[in-house]
Length: 355
Image (tube, rainbow, N blue to C red; front, side, top):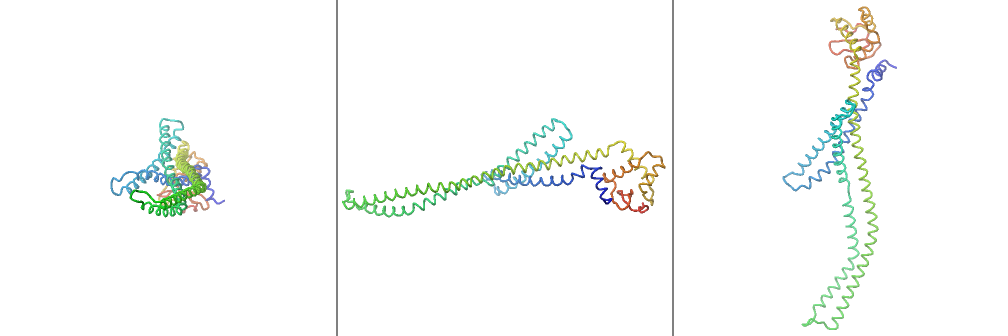
C-alpha cells in the first residue's frame, strides 16, 4: 500500500470516519431529493392551474399571470418544506428529547407534507384521469353505430311518409277520401309501422350487442385508469419519501460532522499539546530557516524538556490535516512545513523548505 493511500485511509477511518464515510452518500441523497420536489411541483401545478382556469376573466393575460404565480408559489412551498424538515431534524438531534419547539416543528412539517401530498395527488389524478373521455367516446361510438343501423329504415319511412302526405292532401271539400285513397292511406301507414317496428327491433338488438362489446372495452379502459391512479399514489408517496430521506440525512450529517469535529477539537489535553507544539514551532521559526523533520521535532521537544510524546506529535499532524491547517502530500517521509500562508505536511528531503 502506498503511503498516500495509507494516510487517506487513516483520515477516513480514524480521524474523521463519519464525515469521510458519508459525504458522498449525503451529496447523492440531498441532490437526488430535488428530483422529488420537481415532480411534486409539476403535479401540484396541474391541480391549482385547473382551479384558477375556472375563475371568470378579470383582466388581460389572466391565464399567464396565474400560471407564473402558481409555479412560483409551489416552488417556494417546496423550498420552505425542505428548510423546515432539515431544521426539524437538526433540532431533534440537538435536543435528544421531546420539547415544545420540536413538537410544534413536527406539526408544521406534517402539515407541509400533507399539503404537498394533497396538491400533488390531485394534480396527478387530473393529469392522467381519462374517465370522462372514455365515457364520451363510448357513447359516441354507440350512437354512431345505432344511427347507421336505423338509417336505411328511416330512408324508406321518409319515402312512404311522403307518398302518404300526397294522398292526404287530395281529400274532397268535406275532408273525406274515396275508397282508393283510403286503401292507399291504409297501405302506407301499415308499411311505415312495419318499417318502424323492424327498425326498433334491429336497433335494440344492435344496442344490446354494442353494450356488451363497448362496455367490456370501456370497463378495461376504466380499470387501467384506476391502476394508473393507484400507481401515482405510490409514486407521490415515494417522492415525498426521497425528499424526507435526502433532507433528513443532510441534517443528520450536519450534526454528526459537527459533533465529530467538536470532539476532535475540544479535548482539553489535546488542546494543550497542540498549543505547545504550535507555540514551539512558530517561536523558533526564522526567515530562511527550514522546517525540521518530525524526528527532529521530537528531539527538540526532549531537549527543551517539553512533556510531549511522539504519539501526541502524530496526533498533532492528524489534527492539522483534519482541520485544514496543513495540506498533506506524501513522497518518502513526513515533515511539517509552515510557510507564511497555509502550512503543509510534506515529505520532501530536509532543508528544502525555506522561509
